[in-house]
Length: 495
Image (cartoon, rainbow, N blue to C red):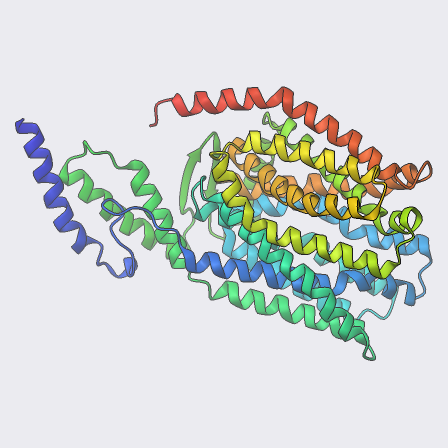
């Protein structure tokens, strides 16, 4: 009885002094982490949504014009194909490295670097009057156009595991809207003389504007959020008054240390088996490269091959669905390209709106991402089969409606599952590795589509059904093991 009274008095005195401790200059606009719950930094999250929208808005202005421009420079179809594949090959090798680098030096500096170098690449593209200069302009974009991946990693740092699907879905929706509107503006600019060059410079200006927005983001919210997370995870009710007081003082000093520009090592944490160290960007390059190599090696040696294999199979399957969509609609149902374009735009808009459904759907599944991924994969496979066997256009419209929703949910599920399995502290490396797997799919899909199309106009979609069934079978085998590991992790005592 005496100990309970003593503990309650200590907590009462701590709450009184906590207010004064939290008035230190580096903790303005933040509340004591011990007596208040963590609050999601909504301002910076909304700003990241804007960054994602503007990113794909600028890129989608350029993408439809690239093949036409490189041919206008005198490139043969074969050379145009090789030049077009340069971007995908560079993305394949750089996605994981840049993602891991963002874990090492921090999201702010890596995101700024990617945006500025991408702006340089698109600006150089606006000066490309020869094939050599065109290829040179695609190199910095291929190596550093990973701003969306870093944004996703930053969002995973800022929200809890339960909130992550909702926030990721909203981010994907905002990005998709930009991808829908961009071609409209790019097509309008192309109608003027030198339209491609004007579009390239506008895209470069958008990336520079994005870099300025990232520079001015309220990064203090992320620092306060991390300190709150550390304090909440380390504080126990049985701590004495002096221990609690010292904990808050240590948080204040830690924050001052984080904000110092020449800090050599800010923080080292471990979560779910993944260690990461957020060091200053001014550290020697060899130390940064060593940390990046450690991160990548940990991902490569992990037991996550099944998640990445499912991602690869479904990426190729979905790309096969879209690979010859226009040609198949013309050969099977005599649809004009204009009508097919309307159908594609309709599906794209539904995909953007479906991003807002991810949160409610995951809540309906009680955040069981394994079951949701299995069901969305099975639905996607079924819809591809119905498209391949559709007797009329209206069945294609119906399948396209649900296909856009199922693929959007499945894409968010696989990313969230990667972070659950690998640990959110290595989110940059994991998301980068996922993008590298998707890049492999971009390389394989055109080849497989060409071979399957030799057999039938429905050949690519039929092959997509086969790959989807393999992914469903793999999920049926591996999902029980994932769930058992999750239950063991939840039952294990927290340190």
